[in-house]
Length: 203
Ligand code: MG
Image (cartoon, rainbow, N blue to C red; front, side, top):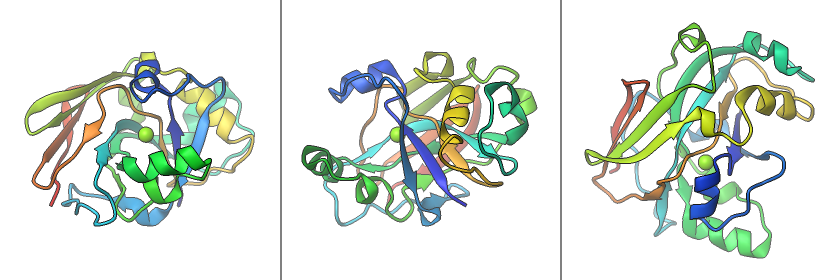
């Protein structure tokens, strides 16, 4: 499986990192070795001094597809969940300044903690979903999928013009504003429409 991620998909998040609002989706990968499941502890990597959390809506792919038209996207999704796009911001900033890829800043081991997945039938409108991320009991991110610059159906249609999606692939759909640094000992909790799906610690 692969993890396809979308960058800068919320205006206020693009602004908080002084990035322009993109005119088409910004896409990058994480390898399958980035996945961290079942609320397992996340271990702060030694190669960064500025690890950031980015809480995102994650959709799981139901079956193989390419050149998918927006009106058929629903049948390619079999799970809705949350994930944290862990980012070594210092490494990413260096890469950005040199025009280099974000691979090491975003794709390191365990950089994609993901929740369990809920039945998409619970979410008839993918652009009307609220999610939150709390660090040490303090609300840090409040996301609303209606604020996405590129909606989920458009994203999947766009991505599959270039890349075939396969069963089990995960798509991270971008983070709203409020990202920030993590420290060893931090407690991360994330809720999707009031259901707590993520609850783990940084060690
Ligand atoms: Mg992200």
